[in-house]
Length: 395
Image 1 (spheres, rainbow, N blue to C red):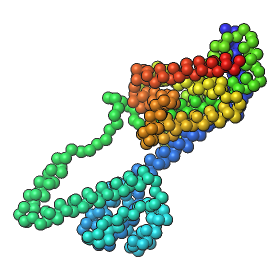
Image 2: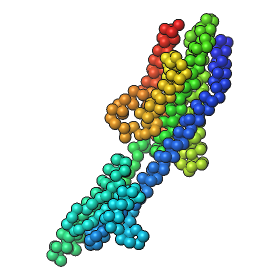
Image 3: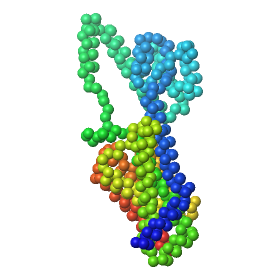
Image 4: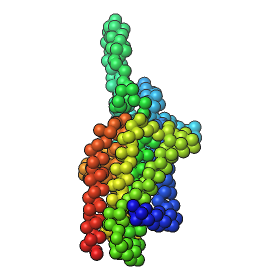
């Protein structure tokens, strides 16, 4: 036991003497969670706000008037019909949209001609498709209502009130459309940007230990201290076990740091809703320890494989970023190609994120995180066995 405590002391000294590495280890995930969360929140505000579009009406009849009203009352668009108190023309609208000042425009040229939707050519593809579909839906709806009104006007006068009354009564009987989250009964957790982002950056921060952990292994290999330790009556399990314990402590600190940001910093300084942890504290502890072990195993495996600090830093940082991207840390999984979604199922970062989402968002229990926890533990075991085999071969 005294030997193991000595190894722990050595690992802590190595870790805390590398002050720049520690700053990067904790500062990088913090900066990223702030940048990504604030950017996503701003994007949601922009998406939920009305988009200003140009409306060029050259016929001025009842249909164009109704369409203008429907566009403005849709909650998605705000129509601009004049610039500098002058009515818009088609050429002026094209110039404004082409320059990027406005994102879209609707042109009604003649009664019998097609209604033209002008779109900014630089608009992002997903936003362009969403905007075109929304505009077409409103236009088609207005055309349908206008056609029904025209049919009613052509009916005999004594039938018009009866049919109009039946139509109005039928519309009133239509059930309302509401939205709700697929959550457990009596769930107090409401999904939001914080609930979904914090789990991803917890895993990102944990796996970021690959740089100092792999670096310490390479330093010991190149300086010969690793071989000197092996020449002493100290087991290989004790040497690597000391690193596991020390970096498990680091991962737990990163977990606490991310929780503090989600529960205190974002609500206090930015007005975001606080991170809700639910009530499965045992599940949170199990999810955290299993994810930490997987991150430590990854770091040790990189350190065992790499021969220089540059190799470890470059490969480790690139792999962590790639794993974070395909696992949902920066972008939602569902917007990625099917091939990437399938590959992400093999990522330990994805397993850890899904565990936290099951606990923080879906209010699952220990049983709900058991499959991914087993996968994370198996990954840790595989990484440690692989690392031991590599060290034995190098000897």
